[in-house]
Length: 268
Image 1 (cartoon, rainbow, N blue to C red):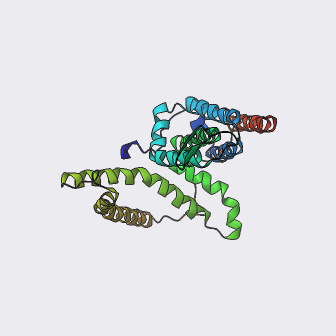
Image 2: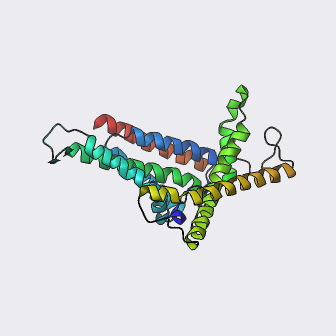
Image 3: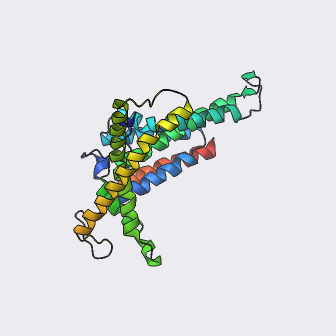
């Protein structure tokens, strides 16, 4: 299960999505999230879903990566679906009624709609990290937040912390898997027993994990200090962010799709 978590991973490539300016990718990803929440019917949501599937096809990211990005959040998706299924009241006769459980067609429709929306949201946000390296992502976030420097906000440090946190997610997942394997080899029962027993079994995992995380953070801080690292003004960058015609073409396509969804909402 832990090996299937792909949050924060980057897969190098030379596709159109990979070659786009990372600033445009962040803005368009945010616009896509807005698009999903603006969509209020299945036709609009289908348009948004087809758009992100086409983006995955163009990027060259394997379809299995979409499934892996959904696995860690599967309990949240199911919980959301169950809430909508049992707590949405309809205007017509219920399809199923037993004791305090009543299911309407509106509840089923809303549950399916929310599942599709969350799936599109997760795979859409995952595509950003799949096709953008952490270093480039840091530069893009810093450039986008640069106007906030006028109010003395430490933009560079904020962008660096966000990217380091994202970068270390796969490392911490790998470390957790190693600790769990080591504890199981010592006879720890992590997958058996009730909820309380499983919660107690997490203690021998969490303590070494926190120690390892703080150790890695300290080593990283010392390495940066030894190299006299100082961010902010005056620091040069290996890759200069430059917008191209490709970025504007993809942005125009995204705006066009967004326009179709707005028109569809008004018509239907």
